[in-house]
Amino acid sequence: MANIEALRGTALETGRAESTSVKWDFISTFSPKHGAAVGESLGPEAIAGHLKGENGDAIKVDHFDMQLDSLEKIMSNVSTHEPDVIGISVKIGALQ
Image (cartoon, rainbow, N blue to C red; front, top):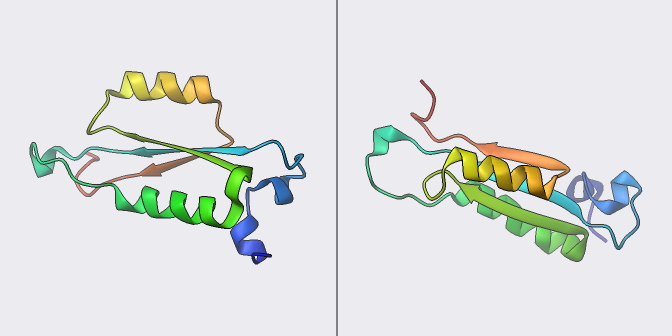
């Protein structure tokens, strides 16, 4: 069994039934300082991979990237998903 740090936010820690997945949404921001170049959002992808590897079907992860979709579309999807946890990856230069 994985250590307790890997189980934070999972079905085991929250007391949910094993059949109920904990839903995570990750949102990656866009930085106009990097021009039109599309970059990879490796941080959220690495975290998502770790969560899935440690928790299997007890975790459901979705990742939205502002390089590819508008904020309005992303927020609509997040509202529909009703995640338990939202993670935001802010790229250098994304904030004014």
